[in-house]
Amino acid sequence: MTDHSEELALLLSTIPDRSTPETARGTTRFVFVGRVSTEEERGLQSRLNSQGWQREQARKVVAGCEGGVIVEEVFDEISRSMPWVRRPNAAELLRRIQNREHQFDAIVVGETKRMFSGRALEDVWNILHSAGVQLWLPDIGRYDHTNISHRLLTQMDGLMGRFESETISKRVAASMREIALRGDDKRWMGGNAPYGYVLTPLPEDQQLSRSAKGYTNTLALDPATAQTVRDIFTLFAEGKSLRQISGVLAERGIPSPTGKVTWHVSVIQNLLTNLTYTGYRIYGKQHKTRVPFDENNPAMGDRILRVRTGTRAEPSAAPVFPQIIETAQYVAVQKLLGAKRSRGLTATRERKTKVVIPLRSCVYCEGKKMEADVIVKSGNIRFRLRGDRSAGTTAITISEAKLEATVANWFGQTFSRRNMPHIRRQLQENSPLVRREVERLQEQQRSLQTLISNLLGALERQGSARVQDLLMQREQELEEVLTRIESVRMTDANAENALRLFELVGREMRVVMGLASREQRARLYDRLGLRLDYFPDEQAVRVTVAPNQAATPGWGQSQCPWRDSNPQPFP
Image (cartoon, rainbow, N blue to C red):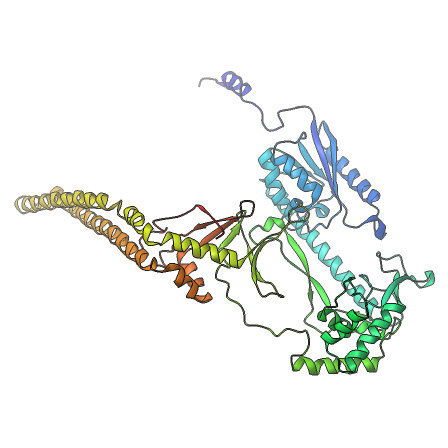
């Protein structure tokens, strides 16, 4: 057997080694990426201490790489549940990697659980791998996505990081509840002081421990605003309505809690229902919940919303703050509020029937679906694309009225009588081709029928197996030709059906759209597969339709034959 080892070694020497970066074969340049979630002023962990031990861990990891050196550091002060693309410094690092503007070969972190939560590591790895950047982790070294043990360890670290974050949240919530319900602890549990109070530091002997910022304060009376609170309760008990109380406060020149001249009735109602004015500390009025930041992009992580709890809030065991309103007066006002609420005389709005929004699933901006919601004050409907503060983007909004006017204008122009000849020409462009195809297939049908007749005669004379096989083959070909003829004829028939539909829809389209109910327009948009792409810079909307064959019987095409994709300016 011929030895090809020398020839093979020569060939291998010509193939470039891409397992390490092209630049600096002897040196691997690292970027240390760290994170601290607690501010230095909160006293739980110093930024310098956190950076120090994470940097030391990263150096130990880099020591396992021959020629490894840390050339840059990136540090964020943000929660671990926040994905890298929403961390300011980490997001800038990923942007440089994606744009090939980086001057390093690998990324190293000091602690996996601190840097990644959930599936964040996999999302980051996909970006790094596409740019040829390595990822080095403690206890693993260089991360290899094809190594099943590496993937299991990192997935476990991600789950442990999320579990650790959720465990801390539960412990803190349980501790806060225990402190809030105690009657001997006068600490204010964070947030702004209610109207009528001011924050004041607790005496040092009552500061039980060095806790989070704001938890060493208590509430003290603000004489001027506390008297305003008493006046509001007195006026309401005397029979004044919320709007009348607002007028009295405006006449007296008393500014609202936000400094405005006019008091909104909802502000007055919130004051009347605030149990803190009786001196009791209240806990459990609302809680935090996580919802997807972008339902179409799981890599963007979650965002935190504060929502009111479905259970009753709990007061402390005894009064802990200075009392502004007597308990008996507060209870009497609550009964009066309940009686007026049952008659619909307070600022509480009755729950309305859910509004049907025809364009709810049709509006897009920057490739993302826009959310539809109802503005409470005006009752108008708007479509919104949320912004991202960490990325410096603002929300994009547009009213439903503008979009509906654009759609009606588009329908009126598209299905007008003057466009019918153009639509007819486009639908009938294929008709000559269809007829020629049918004639060709019919000629093939006649040839096969003649051949089958001859084979039948030969089979009667000879009866050989070869003739029988040829006969079966030609009969199968004839069946396929007949199916093809029927299919081509159906295409021509569907074009005629579509033309008749266009002519029917084209009659007074603007009037029809104006008289249609929201439910009818929603069904129409769904059957047409309507899509609106909003361009905020040009203040234009691109209208496209792609009728669903299952939802539109009689149409043999998956798209409208006359598809208009030109941006439509607002009428």
